[in-house]
Length: 508
Image (cartoon, rainbow, N blue to C red; front, top):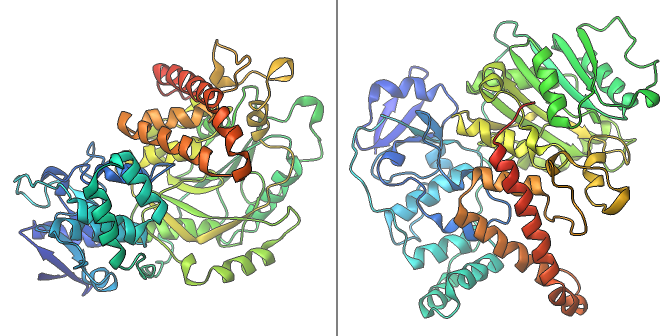
């Protein structure tokens, strides 16, 4: 491999013939590996990952609508990598018989263990298409190295349990180490704050005025306080306590809007419309945050030169825990805490996004109101824009999770049927009657929105398989008898999801 030395003295390694003039700028950004593989036959290579996930990994499909995007599908003949990352991950794994699988495995390990592999359009000018098909042997070796034994068996079931070649390669893969001992790639040292960017902190809340007031107090004690805090409160008028939100001495502008609409997505969009900051931080109403929380969000995005990050969301054991308990929980995580790489989830409890990307999305998709999945939808939508969404271990929160209050009250209504049920936003003009849709129609809507028909089929297969094999063995006969009703529930969920898909994304 050839070497390129940056102005800061960092060594980049490369194969093939990249545009060397681009390397300096790339080295200053969030990436650790760069390639143009998606234009060279690698787009959506190794689709057999669909047999692994019951909830799909964001990066199972590639995104090519922008000139750069997170992508782990590396072409072994043409890529660039930081020498430090190459050495940390010990390069290609020789256990695979093909160099193509070695490169895909390397990119996957980077994506999972804290590095950022990226597709860069035009970095390599070669448009020669590679046949990136993977052998049965290498596919089984990959599954045994990365996933559980049960997932390999599920793959055989879906591929065809009668196929002798699948079983032969399954047993051959037993001779390889089943799990990598890879450590998390150490994060970069955060740069000092650059400039004085403005920050809008957004809090949707419902029936939790006391918790929200405590969070506002935490925000007033920040080393870098927000410019404004925007609270959209859906607490019914008869349950509001006038003693809250009256402090006029906060070091920021406090905006409180009483929500007349329904749903947390609409609440966030109403808050976004009132926000003026260079950065938007989204937070739940029931969290505690350390004093450097906001500062570290901004410093991480400035250091890595990217537009969004997802902070550590640590769940409390009970609502009375404090930041001292958060420190204990963080210490127990050890080195596993310090992962800064491409995030595969998104949390509206703790995330920071540059204003321009929020504006490009137009806000949250309100089709998710009344259900679940809005966080993941917002995150994967950012990734589709070409934004590198990072984990941020430097800005943790303690999530108190009180037993009552919050927008999940609406989600709880979805479990009811009959006259006690409150109509959900996703029901549109077709109210739920006797058959309650399961899984949540909004989760199903997210799958239809972001993944393929073939991947939906695998989700369905795995969903019913998990229903049958999980739980007490004594109740298995009952679960088998209940399968027709379970299928009715699934079909009903799919019905509502397809209705939402026909509407398309809505922001109000």
